[in-house]
Length: 423
Image (cartoon, rainbow, N blue to C red):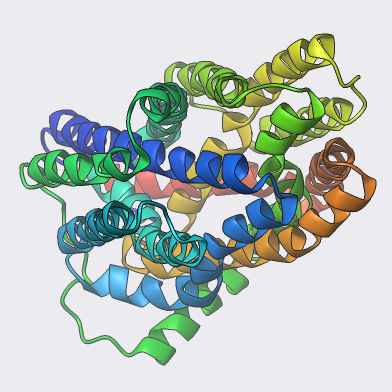
């Protein structure tokens, strides 16, 4: 478990860090949305969108277990700046090719999506593992709620800004916003003090350290089962999510702007959910809201697959996504806080790598079937499968005593540790 003492001036340091991640995240997601919209508009293919999403997840599947040891033992500031630099460099390459050829070769777009995902494979576990070293443990649930708010804000601003830029700026110039994000994000990160942990600077033994990350996770039986249930949720949920642009454009007869509206609404209500957690984040049993969240998401997303293919159906779809949005942080933010409180800081990068590998592996497996399934039964019917994922996984969290009682037992251990440190 992590240190229960607050680092000095942690609020100023942490919120400066959060600001850099926010600005960098917005520019990165603007480009990500633009690429997906470009593929949807140019090809109109469910399979292309599925494979593009797979290309964005395969690096996480392959490399997530192995980046954890590197994150634990390398300078986290260097890892974060380097991963952003790679993304900016890829944007320059793609822009240059488009200027020369007059279009984006689909193969090159897939390569860039894959390489961006590889950089993200380093970035997200690094952020997740450094947060517990920057804030006191009793603030972690609130801080994760605020981090979830930041991510929601990224998903609110990015599609709106992306749709606006997509309509007025040539694609080859739009993707260079990644370079702007790198300059701003790296500049702010240089001003942040990231605490070191005992494993920083140690020699990396990749296989041994990776195995140690698996051992740490597997030996914590409650969190192991929570991680497996989360992976099952991704397996069933991702196919429907990858079809959102086509559901909006093809099924409901909407536009790229309408696709952006769905993203903005979902993310706006995620922001509200994160705000609630950020203010009232000290839950006595975080598993209960996680269970309710998964089941509620499953019900409303499943209902989306039964809507009529007209404008009224689209408006109802917007409302359903608002409900799903507000429920989402009650699973993701609370789970992340529990993970961060369950393991020593020097192992957290390795554990996060393992958990990310599990969820990343499940996503592409589901997406392999998403394209053919959508083209066979209709893109909207895939939402019924995604909805069943939320209901099944929420029920599993409730039925297994190890998962149902996990947070109560965890908070008892944290309380004992805090009392011991204060004695």
